Amino acid sequence: MHTYSRRTLLSASLMAAGSGALAACTGTETEADSAPRPGPPARPSTSARPSTSARPRSSARPTAAPAPGSTGHSDRRFVPEGPGGYVNPSDPEVLAVEREREGGAVRRFRLTATQTLLDLGGRTVRSWAYGDSVPGPEVRVTAGDILDLTLANHLPVGTTLHSHGVRLRCDMDGVPDLTQAAIRPGEDFRYRFTVSHPGTYWLHSHLGMQLDRGLYAPLIVDDPRERLSYDKEWVVILDDWVDGVDGSTPDAVLRSLGGGMPGMDMGRTNDSGEDGGRGGAGRHGHASFDGADGPSRILRYSHSRLLGGPGGHVDFPYYLINGRLPHAPSVFRARPGDRIRLRIINAGAETAFRVALGGHRMTVTHTDGYPVEHQSTDALLIGMAERYDVLVTAGDGVFPLVALAEGKEARALALLRTGKGGDAPPASVYPGELDGRLVPAQRLVPHESVAFSVRKPDREIRIMLHGSMKRFDWNFDHRPYSVEQRHPIREDERVRLTLINATNMWHPLHLHGHTFAMTGIDAAGARKDTAAVLPHRKLVVDFYADNPGLWMLHCHNQYHSESGMMTILGYRK
Image (cartoon, rainbow, N blue to C red; front, side, top):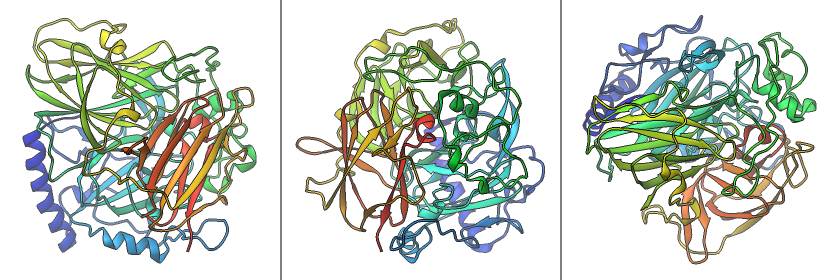
C-alpha cells in the first residue's frame, strides 16, 4: 500500500480540489482523463494522491465521462422485483436526499475488473482483481466531494461495485438485482454520488463469491477539519486467500460446504454466453472458471474463546496483509518517534483477525469511519468488513504487525521498519501484545460529535439468525434470501434492530446505507455499520432512517451470505 505524510496529504487535497473543480466546471479533460477506455486492460495509471515514494501504478483511472455504450444512473434506472408501495432505488425520494448533500468537487476514477496473475510475494496465482494488484488501487477523496467512479467489466461474468460503509444514494449501492442489474462482460457502469462523511471505507464486488477473489480496494475519505495530529499514514488490509491455489476457487469451496442456492442462480447476471462452469454456485455466483476445484478446504476443527465458538469453516491456505504472504511481508518505513495513523480494514471473506503491533500500544480513534473517545489497547479483534483507525508512536527498530487468524492457528504479517539495520522477525513471530489488553467494540464510546441521543425508538424490528454447519443453511427467520423480501420502515424514524443469534456460530452483520449505534444500558454506543453477534447472544442497534431506498442487511461472512443470510429493509412510500 502507499505511505503518506500528513503534510503531503493536506497539500495534495488542496491541489486536487482546484484541479477537480476546474475539470468539473469546464468539462475539459485533465492529463489523467485521457486514459484509454474499454478494450483489453490498459497499463494502470497513477493513484489518486501522491505518495512519499515514487508514484505507484494503479488501475484507478480518473476519467472525464462515460464512453458511448457505457451505463450508469443517468441512463439506466433499475426497478427490482418485489411488492409495491416501497421507495425504489432511483425514486424521487432518493434523488431529493442526494441533492441535500450538496456535493463539492468531482473526483473521477476508473477501475477495471479483470482476470490477471497476482504475485502474493513469491507465489503467483490467477484470480480476478481491479487492475494487476491486490488490494486494488486506493481511491481517496475528501468529505463533501462527489465520487465519480467508472467500473469497466473485463471479466467473463457480470459484476458490481459496493462502497462499503458509505451513506450513499441507493441506486449507487451496487447490490445486483436490488439496486442495479449486474454489469455485463464488456460493459461499464458509472457510480456517482456525494461522499458526505470522512472515514476509512472500502470497495468490493457484491456479486456471488467475487469478494473472496481479489476484487476489493480501499476507499479513504479525508476530513477537511481533521482533529488528529500524525506524521504518516499506513493503510493495512487483511485478507484470507484461497483463489487460484492448487486449483481452488471460492465457488468450489462454497459447494463443498453445501452452500449456495442453485434455484436462485439468476443467470440473467451472466450475459457472456458461458454456462458458469460445472454446476451451480451461490445466489449470483458461478462455479470455477479455471478448471479444477482443488483440494478440500473444509476446516474440521476451529475454536476461539473470543468468538465464543468456531472461528470459521474454511481452511484458507494463505492469510495476507496488503496482498503479501508472511515470508515476504509488506514493509512500512518511518522514523523513530513518528506518529502513525493505521487504517486497518478486514477484507477477508470468512476470518476474524486479532491484530497487534509488536513493541507498541495502539490508541483507538475510529471504528467503521466514525470517531470514538480515545482508548489504549494492545490488540484488536476485527471481524470481516470492520475497520479500525489507531495511532501509534513508532519505536526504533523492526516491528511485526501480526494479524492472527482467530481460531484458525495461522497468521498474516507486515513489518514496521524505522531504521536501516535490524533483522526482520520470522514469519512465525507471536508478539506478546496479542494476548494483552483488548478493547471490544461494545466498550468504545462515541465521540460527542457523532453520538446518538438517548431516546426510545419509533419502530422495533426483531430478527432471528438460524442455520447450522451440518446443512450450511444460514438464514434470517428461517427464510433464505429473496430479492422480494421487505422489512418496512419509514423515513425519519429511529429504528431499533434486535438481532438474536440462535446458531452456534458468530456472525458479522452489516447494514447498507446507514450507520447504527450499538446500544448500551445508559447511552447509545459507538457508531458502526458492521458488528459481530456471538453464538446464542443478541446484538441491539439503533439507526435513523434518513436515507430512502431498499437496503441490505446481511452477514459479512461471504459463505454465510451466499447461503441465504441476507434480507432487505425497505422504506415505505
